[in-house]
Amino acid sequence: MTNASILVVDDNKNVLSALEILLQFEYKSVQTLFNPNQISSFPNLDEIDIVLLDMNFSAGVNTGNEGLFWLNEIKKKSPSTSVIMMTAYGAVDLAVRALKQGASDFILKPWNNERLLTTVKSAYEYRKSKLEIRNLKKKESHLKQVINDGKNLIIGNSKALTAVLNLTRKVAKTDVNVLITGENGTGKELIARELHRLSPRKNEVFIGVDMGSIAENLFESELFGHIKGSFTDAKEDRAGKFEAANQGSLFLDEMGNLSLQMQAKLLSAIQNKSVTRVGSNKPIDVDIRLICATNCNLEQMVVDGLFREDLLYRINTIHIEVPPLREREGDILILADFFLKRFANKYDKPGLRINNLAQEKLMDYQWPGNVRELQHTMERAVILSEGNVLKPSDFLLHNKPSQSFEHGPATLDEMEQQMILKALDQHDGNYSAAAEQLGISRQTLYNKLKKKSK
Ligand SMILES: Nc1ncnc2c1ncn2[C@@H]1O[C@H](COP(=O)(O)OP(=O)(O)OP(=O)(O)O)[C@@H](O)[C@H]1O
Image 1 (tube, rainbow, N blue to C red):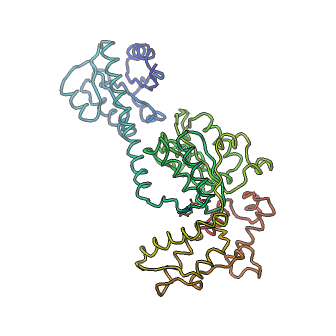
Image 2: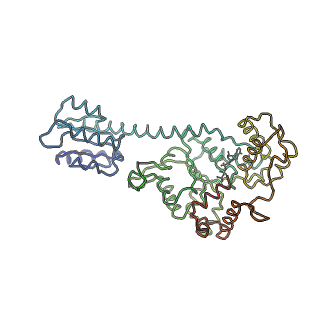
Image 3: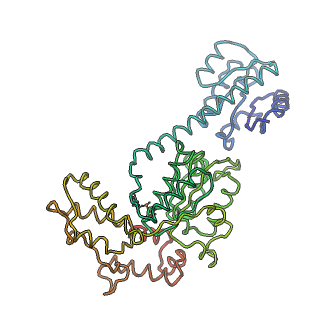
C-alpha cells in the first residue's frame, strides 16, 4: 500500500465510486468530491499528493474551461500537488492546454484500469521529486550558512578539552542522542557542531534552536510547523525545525528553560520520531540526530520537579560535560592568541602581541563567562590598542566577577541584573517563578540574562 493521498473530483457519482474502489487497493487515502466548488475550501490541499480532476462539470458543456479553471485554483493553493485531468472528449488541443497550465497528465474516459494506475503512479513519483527538490533547496541554504560560518575551529590542547574531543569523536559515529552540559560560553554549541561534522550525517543540515527564546504559545509552531490559517499569523504553510532538520542533526540549546508543558510536547515528538504541524492531523516522520545542551543541572531539576525524568533519559544517552575555562588553564593563552590574530586581522592591526605581564593577568583571571568572555576581552583590547604590544592595562579584568557587586551595583544595568539573580536564587533557578515575582515575562527575563552573558 502506497502512503499517498489522492483526491478525485467528478460530478458523476458512478465515476467517483469506481475510482475510489480501484485506487483504495493501492493507496492509503482516497477522498472524493462531487462538487468542484468545494475545492476552494478543501482543508490542507497541500497534503494531497494527486488530484484526479474532471474537465467538464456543467451538464452539456464540454469546452473543458471549468476543468482548466479548477486546475489553476489547485496549482495556486498547492503547486507541488500533481493534477491528472480526465475527460470523455479526447481533444488533443485541450490536453495540451491542460499540460501547459501545469497538469501532470491526462486520462480519457472510459479509462483502462491498468493504464490509469500507471498514470497515477508516475504522477506520485513526480510529486515526490517536487517535494524533495523543495526540501533540498531549504537544506542547501542552511548548509551554505554552516559552511560560510567558518568559525567552527575548536582551539585548545588542555587535558580536559582533549578528553571532551576524544569522547566527541567516538560518539559522533553513532546516532545516539547526546546531552552537552557546561557553563555559559564554554563551547557547547561548538562541540555540537563538531559532533555533526564528524557524523555520517555531515552532508545534511545542522539546525540549532535556542529553546529559551521561544515563547510558550509559538513553541509547537516553531518546532513542528504549521499550516496556513491555523492561527492568525499563519499566512502560509511552514515546516518546523524538526522537519527542516530531517536526515540531519537537530541541536536544542538551553534545554533547562522549557516549561513542563513544552517538555511533554517535545518528549512525544522524540519518542514517536514524528511531528504533526499545528492545524494538521497528518503526522510526518522525521529522522534526526538529537543533540541537546544546557547550563542547568537537569538531574537536580528532576529532583525539584522542574524537569521530566523520562525526557532526561531520552536526551542523555551520552553525556558530554564541557569544563569551564578556569579548569583548562592550558587553553587560555592559546585561545587568547587565536582571538588576537583573528581580531588583529579584522581590525587591520597586524603585528600585535601580548606581553608577559598581560599574559599573567589573563592566566590569573577566573573567566566566569568562559571562552565567550575571553573572545570579547580580546576584541575590545585589539580595538582599543594603540601600540604593537598589549599590556595588562589593556585588559579590564577584575577577579571578583561583576555579579557579586561587592560594593553595591554601580549602574542601572547592574542593579537590574542583581535583582534578576536574587529572584532566581529565591526560586531555585526557576525562570517562570522569578519572572512572575519581577513582573516581567519569562521571555524578557531570559533575554536580559542572555544579553548579559553575551
Ligand atoms: N575551544 C574553542 N575554540 C575557539 N572558539 C571557541 C572555543 N570554545 C568556545 N569558542 C567560542 O566562544 C563562543 C561561545 O561558544 P559557544 O556558543 O559554543 O558556547 P556555549 O557553551 O554554547 O554558550 P551558551 O551556554 O551561552 O549557549 C563562540 O563564539 C565560540 O566560537
